[in-house]
Length: 182
Image 1 (tube, rainbow, N blue to C red):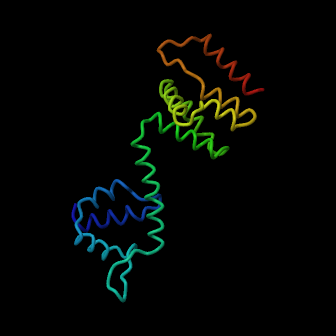
Image 2 (cartoon, helix red, strand yellow; image 1 turned 45 degrees about the vertical axis):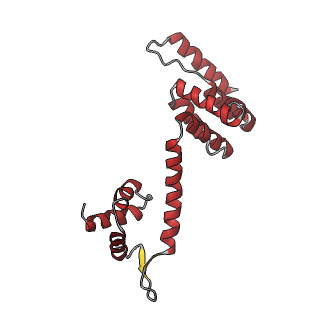
Image 3 (tube, rainbow, N blue to C red; image 1 turned 120 degrees about the vertical axis):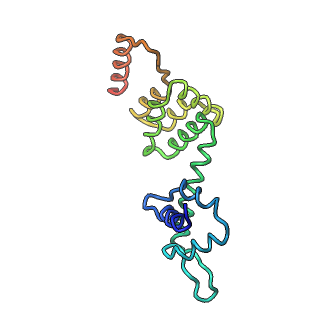
């Protein structure tokens, strides 16, 4: 990619409405040398202002605040990516419980989307990290019908084999209906 194309791509990466395009930005920045960065700053007047008195290209305060916010989000992504999936799920579940009730959706997603082994692993990681089971933590922090539903969801070990028993499916549906209607 040529310098003008890279500059345009990098400017778009920095000024995205939905946030910084980290992939494009990193692919370009790791290749650039100081002279190329100076050229970029000169060509990107939407991000950099030319200082009248001291003749250098400086960032606008708004853009710095935006980039700091975006890189903090990027930092969180990198940290989560490096964790073992069980630990990541356990930490996210704890964070969801700390922010309740808006974040209960994360617990539901964890319980419903993860494989039984993945959920069991997250439960083990939660116990290791926080010294209590996720079921105990949900039961102590959540009230009412939500408590019963969430405890049931996070403590369930689902069968994932190829054969499904209609009797077992009906039985589980009845149990879930009873729990919800209490």
